[in-house]
Amino acid sequence: MTKNNEHIVLYATFQHEPVNYSNREMKSACSLLLCKAASYDYNAPTMRQSALFTKTRRDAPKDEVAKNAQLLIRAGYINKEMAGVYDFLPLGLRVLERINAIIREEMNRIGGQEILMTTLQQKELWEQTDRWSDSAVDSWFKTKFKDGGEVGLGFTHEEPLTSIMRSHISSYHDLPKLVYQIQWKFRNEERAKSGIIRGREFLMKDLYTFASSEEEHGKLYETVAAAYERVFARLQLGERTYRTFAGGGVFSKYSHEFQCLSDVGEDTIYVSKKKRIAVNKEVMNEEVLADLGLSERELSEEKAIEIGNIFSLGTRFSKALGLHFKDRAGKQKDVVMGSYGLGPTRLMGTLAEVFSDEKGLVWPPAVAPFAAHLIAITGGSRDVSAEADRLYELLQENGIETLYDDRDMRAGEKFTDSDLLGIPKRLIISEKTMAEGGVEVISRADGLTTFVSENDLIEHLER
Image (cartoon, rainbow, N blue to C red; front, side, top):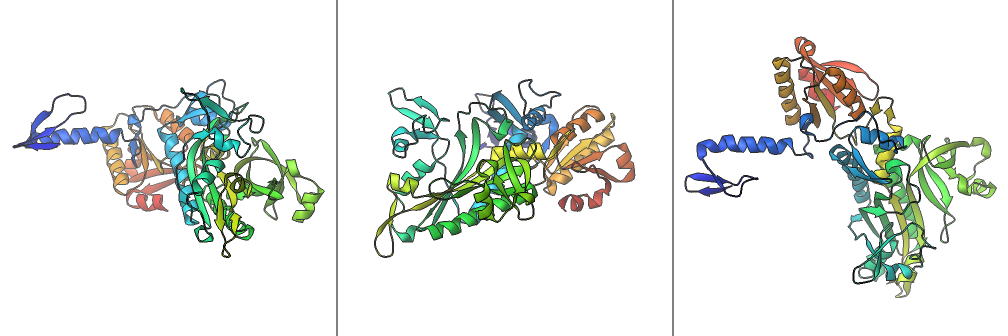
């Protein structure tokens, strides 16, 4: 908007020439455009469901076998492009970003510094660590530039970050460091049939630690492990997630997976619920049991989904790529590294598997796309519609993130959609609730119904 003498020039979105409005006309024009803009802001704290372009559906695609993807597709959270490849639609993106926010807060809390690296990977760099050939890594997506030269799509980032850190680490004064990113990764999975839990394209938080000694690395390793446990607790997955001993490789006897108990899990683990630890079936033997002070009698066999992992890398990558530092005595040493993976899309799929019922999704409040789902049962009454609009504005003013179902549909259809969407609190306003001076509030998790007066509603939702 620009001033032009006594008129204001408003450049309308779909017109080539500016439109001149008098000052008196301006308020009406601006109000109309701002209302339309608000209606189509899909990241806004509140939203009218009539403006949401996605729709629920009765059935999932016939070729989709994973429960998480079936529910998320039916509820309009994601769209399936092909096996193992999905789009995140407005509601799905809101959930994914909330998961990212929790992860980001906990990584920053322990001193992690966030970056964003390129997806395209240099062949020459990965050849230095013997991880370029398909015989070494069979999940590469590779392509070629038009002018020649082969590149890969990153499935992890130890090599490029180690290369970057050569320019920034030269002394023990530069250590320790924790660096992470949240970035799309690509793996050429032979079979992708677990929905967004195991995709060919997926979002990953990968963190890397750089330390001056094994002792310093060990402290960082446990610090990250504790941060992971806080993430899982905030996602309400903590009680069913176990730190699981798995194969460690060259530099440590064990690595650790964080396995979430689920009937659809691809892994089999042996769990000690008393000691809150588990052992992956792949490494289960008498030596491991002895190391951990466990007996077979105290273990139960469970299916689980791996939702995180942590590895000690030693000097595997720093030695190969020349990441060195001078210690206090001036002696050159290789940096000791660790790698820590956590998949936001995998976490979202796990939440959909674990927190759902025969009616649909049941999101934990920390990641739900909205805190409340306001449903107007108008029965053709303009008074109910007006009251619902007023309540929607009240919720907006008090910062309650709300999806407002203002669609002209039958009550049963609205309730079915609400169950499928899985928003924690359903607020129902009708002629009956208006007569009683309040709102019917239904908890999606347990179906508990409470009648709350309008005066107490905000406080009730903020608990």
